[in-house]
Each structure stands twice: as structure tokens, then as C-alpha cells.
Image (cartoon, rainbow, N blue to C red; front, side):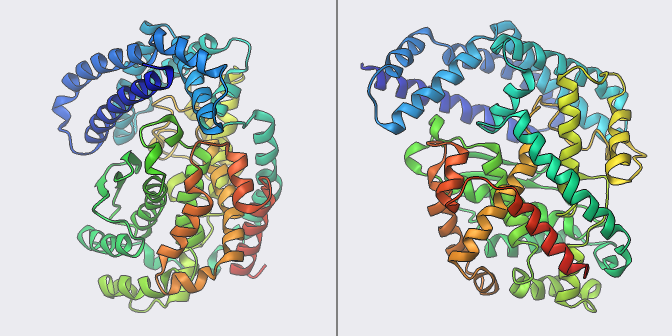
Length: 494
């Protein structure tokens, strides 16, 4: 067996374990009975140990080192480089620490769910503190010479640094926050009372079927379930699963959650089948988020997206929407109002939620804020930046699951993805009549453009290179700032 064959066998084993773990975690978060948690965790610990041992096989490492010194085609060269990095990142962590951390992530996620449901941060705080401390320890094992937060940022978005994020978020701070507070004074100009009330969940599910058909989320390859914190999980190109959560008192939360997750799912489904199960099939978090935000905001919150969908929504919720025309609905779904919940935030205030998390994470990993009472630190940031008071930790620090599973460095990619998508949409609008396509329900043409310009590249090149290939320029966050400024200035007649 030559070295490339050995590496293929290695990746085949890893993808089998990834599928098993993904299936268990998806079921655990959606349909699995709560009474089986303890047994599931026992089995997961055994699987995780075997996974670690396969991933850190010394024979594989020697083959990777040899291949790294050989003349290979560019795709294989990048594949070997990424596999070496993944191997090193895992091998440098002692097995007992690795397994303890994975077990802690499972326990912390359960604790977070209980704490969120009971508004009891004290229940979760010991787990969060330990997750942070262990994440710092793991970063030191991986590379003691690199700033831990820099290491984490690069994990989720190759090439991103604190300096780059600081510059990006400074634009949010100086250009977007003043616009938000300017609009605060004009909030009464847009009526969105009709999206608040009582909306039958069975009817919401009925409209989801229409959205899925319109966005071509095909049940032959896609599946939707329910979870309190919506997510997408791709088991393969033709097995992509999303979740949503229904709020009976709000019409929009579920709708835009579904549109968002279908954006993720479409990306996964349109990837190259030949790379399935390999490290080249993974993509950066920022690029992935760019597709969900593109669907949710740049398509889903545009006027013409609703040309065919809004009449259908009115039929289902006839009494609630009978006096609401499409323009009223369009303005309501784009109303900007400072609020507590990130996933329910409007398009304009959304990046400020991410700015808050970024500043907290940076301070946490630079030991600039105490880990005790992080919920109170959270509340101060919300009052300072968004002028909202946090009265409940469920609506505050407990609203997101990502810190419970140790995903530090992940949050910034949410805002970065929104900025990427502004640049993608600018180019797409130059190539296509997007409004006409939306009005006629021709999502297939939009999806084809996304596949040809973004989805087909996957992880065989860097995010920066993909953006440049797709838009003919390097990443430029001013497109995002200009888009938000222009859109909301028109909506509010500024």
C-alpha cells in the first residue's frame, strides 16, 4: 500500500466515525429520550477514545510527513497540509485531556439546556468556567507560542487574526452602531404588531413546507427536525439535516430560522461529491455562514422574495394578516430594534450581538475579565452597546449553546459571514436579475450561480482565494457597511 492509499484508508475510517458521532449527536439533540443520556455518554466516551486513536496513528503521521515533502498536484498538496495540521492539533493534546474535554462538552451542553430552561445561570457557571479553563489548557498544548485566541480564530476561519477582526468590528462600532441609535428615534414609524400574537404551530409547519419547496430543499436529501437552538448537520451531500424551533407568539422566528438553515443545507448539498468524507469537504465557518445569511437576509428579507410566498402566508394566517399588504410585511420583517436575542435580531443590529461576544471572548482568553459572574459582564455590554437591559439570564448569557461546547472563536464568523455575503450578492446582482428570479421562484438559477462561484471550491483553497475568485476582488467589508447603510436609510427615510 502506497502512502496515498494509506491516507485514503485513514480518511475513510475517520468519515465512518464522523457519521456515527454526528448521528448520535443529532438524535441526542432532537428525538432521543432524555432518560438515555447517561448510557449514551458512556458509549460516546468509548467511541471518542477509538476516534482519537485512529486520528493519531503514527503510521499515518509518517506517511503524511513523507507526502508533504513530495511533488504533488495542488489539490493533494493542500489535502496533505490540512491533514497534517489536524493530526498535529489532536496529537499534541494528551489522550486523557482530550477525552476529558469531550466528555465535559457533553455534560456542559446538558447543564446549559437545564440552566436555560430554568433561568438558573448558577447551574451552568461551573461548567462554563471549566470549559474555558480546559480550552486554554488545550491551546497551550497545541502551540504555547501563539496567542490562544489567535489559534481559535484561525480554527474557524483560516487566516483570520485578532488584528483583522479588530479592524472589521471597529467598522461595526463606528459606522453601524450610530446608525442603529439614529433609527431608534424613528422606531414608531414601522408597525410590526401583526407579527406578534398567537400563531398556531401546525400552521407554521404548514408554511414551512411551502418555504422548503420554494427554496428547493428536497426531502430526498434534506430532513427537518426541532431543537431549541436551530442548527444544520450534514452527514453527507445527500443527507443534510436542519432543525427549527417554534414560538407560538412570534410569526417570524421559525420562518427565518428555516430560511437560514436551508442556506447552510444548500451549501452542503451542492459540494463536490468526489471530496465527500475528506478534509477537503470541510469549509470555513465564515463562508458557511455567508450562505445562510445570504439566504436569510439578502434573499429572504428582500421584497421580491415574498411576491409568491406572501399570498401563501396570508392564506394560512388569514385572520392575522388580512389587513397587511406585502409592503407592510416587508417593512415589518426589516424593522430595526435593539433587542436581547441574537437569533431573533434584525439584520442591522445583528453584528453588534457578535461584537459583544467577540469582545468578551478576547477578554476571557487574555485574562482581562474574571470568570466569576460572566453573566453580569454580559449584561453590561448589552446596556452599553444596545441600550437594552437584561432581566433574565435565559435571554442573556444562556441564550446561545456555543460556549457550552467550547466553540470559542466561532461567534465572530457570524458577522464575518454576513459581510462576505454582501460582497457575493453585489457580484450576483451584476451577473443575474436576482429580483426577477426571486419573484418567479427560480431559485435553481441562483443556486447554480452559488455552486459555480462558491460551493464548488470547498476547502481546496482558502476563504480569501474563494472570495477573490467569486467577486474579482479581495474581501472588502465596506460592501457590508454600505449595504446596511443604504438599505436602512431607505426603509427609514433617513
